[in-house]
Image (cartoon, rainbow, N blue to C red; front, side, top):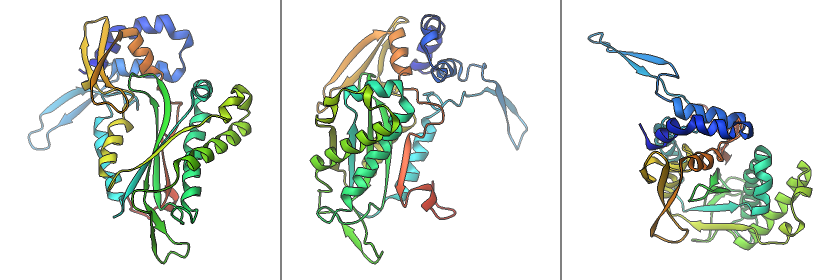
Length: 313
C-alpha cells in the first residue's frame, strides 16, 4: 500500500466529517476512491491460468483518474505514444501561469477558466508562430497539459505546452524551421495571452470578478528549447496521470503528520515540508478536476480530427 493511500485510509472519515459540507461531489468521490482502492470495497476480479486452471482472486482498483495507485502504468503508456509522435526537429516548452487574482476565480469556476487557459494559450502560440517575424507557419502539432499544483501542493494553475520548432509552409511543400533555440518573443506571447484571456473572461461573464489591475500586470509566460523533446515528455509523463505528488516524495508519516520533500524553483536543494494528515488531504483534493474535464489538449496534426485511421492517440 502506498503512503498516500494509507493517509487516506487513516483520515478520510474524519476529513469528510469535518469538511464534507464544503466538498464537491468530485472531491468526495476521489476521497472515497483513493481510500478504498484495492481494499475489496471496489469489488474483486479473478485470474485463471490458461494452462493449469489455477484461479486467483484479487481486489479491484477504483479506476479514479486522481488515484495514485491506478495511474502509474498509464503514464508509461502515454510517454511511449507521445514519443512516437515526435518530429525530427528541435522542440520547445512554453508555460503559462495564471495570476493570483485569476486563480481565485478559477477556484470558483474551474471548468470555464481551465478551458480558457488551455485554449487561449494554444491560440496565442499558434498566432505568433505563424507571424513571419518569428517562424512564419502554423504550428505542426503541439499539445498542452494542465497542472493545478505547486511544489508544496498549493493551488497554482498553469499549463505546459510542447511545441515542435517549425511547421509546413502554407502550400505544404516545405518545412519551415524555427531559428535555433528561438521560437517567439516571450513578451509578445505574454501580452497576447493576457489579451485573449481578458476577452474570454468577458464572454464568460467573469470579468467583473477580477480587479482591473490584472489586465495591466505582466502575465507569467516562459518558453525554452528542450532539444528533441524526449526528456520533456518523460518530465510531463510523471505528472499527467497523478495528482500533485508521488509517493516517493513522502519521507515520513507517523499517523498524524506527513513530511514530504520539494525543491524551490531554480534550486536543486531538497527541502522538507511537514503538515498534518488532514491538511495533506485538503491540498491533495484541491487538484481534483471537474467531471469530464480534458486536461491534455492536442492541436495541429495531433488533434483527434486530424489523425488518420490506425494512428496513435
